[in-house]
Image 1: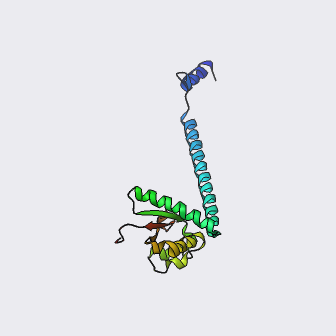
Image 2: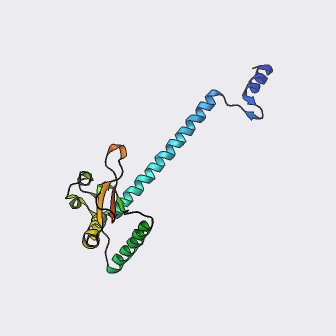
Image 3: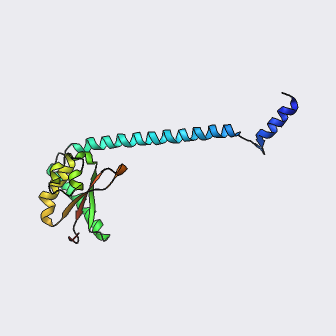
Amino acid sequence: MSQEQKKDESHHQELGDEIFMSAGDLRAYMSEMQMARASEAVKGMDLAEKARRELMKQLSEPLVLTPARLKEITHNLQIKLRRAAQDGKDELMVMRFPNALCTDKGRAINNSDPDWPETLTGRPRQAYELWRDQLRSAGYKLNAMIIEWPSGLPGDVGFFLRWGDQKR
């Protein structure tokens, strides 16, 4: 390559004080950036799936409900209920859990089947029993509903305590 061609080539590759990328270099850079973003997204999805599995494991194991533990749970619930009422709300989501903790993956809840409580397992079952045995007689209503629809399929379930207008 002659001196003039080298000078001409270096002139085309520099723009101001910065080196100018060729179109091929820019495409390679874009590809690397896309791969890095995809890798981060996959890593994030892997971390989310790991957290979801850990949550499932934790929620599938019932709590040991000693009198002290039950008192702590009801005390924390009272604080949250008062705060919601002060904010003018008449319901509070008290639990969210994956539909896999229902023996039918949430089908009975989604279809408002009156026997939906029979499908609950683990801590969701305990939460239902706490409502049934202690909160229902105090006038609280419990609604269970699918609150997330990933890819159009039932996902997480939410438990909502209601104390306001019961005509819903």
